[in-house]
Length: 60
Image (tube, rainbow, N blue to C red; front, side, top):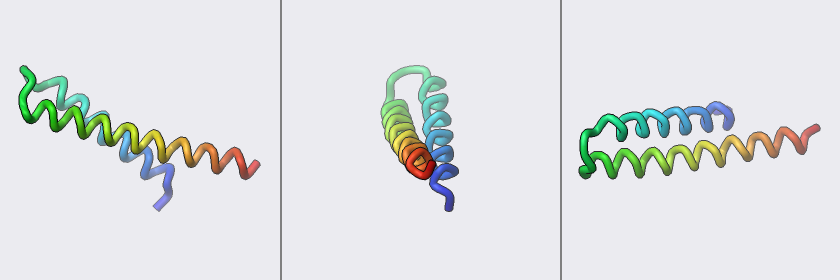
């Protein structure tokens, strides 16, 4: 699987969990889990994408 595609998937899932956490009416366990998952997924996806960009720049 292409790492760039994997990075975009992680960021997209992170954004979905962020939107889910914004729709929960008050801070609950579901809110905490969805917000934590969003943070982890977005950081992971961004890290993967940054590694792809670094690799692409080194190849030039």
